[in-house]
Image (cartoon, rainbow, N blue to C red; front, top):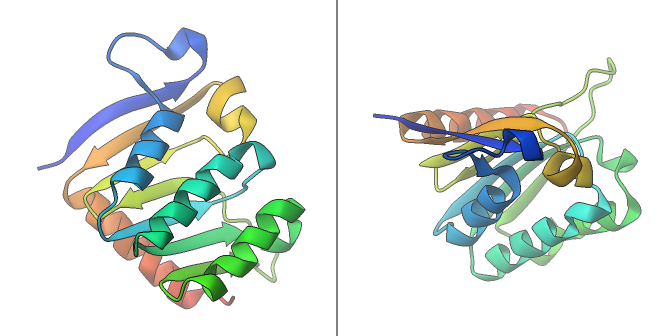
Length: 160
């Protein structure tokens, strides 16, 4: 059985029963016991704290698989972390999505332990976490497993 919660950013969206996207991202990373899967269009310097949380997770031995759109166009600090994480931690895999036809990876997904997943419109940026009006969902159950499988499959197919 799957459980679904609505998530959002933007003051007008934040009503009773709707959780903020950024705290859920932090919770998913911090609570991971085995693995984390991420698909992302962009990380900006205002989301460096998320990379720090991922670094702490990697230090705890959490397996991390990340597929990030066009790493070469990410901010220099972000690019440095993404390019070094897999070298520093053998259980961290960062895949650069760079489609020769110019297609973009625009997904924003994070899966924790294959049983909880956030899927939404928010980028890992100031706008996505704070300033914009974004909506997402937190899934718990079999659908989170399927998302992790999809990310695994995609990361194996994509050229790094």
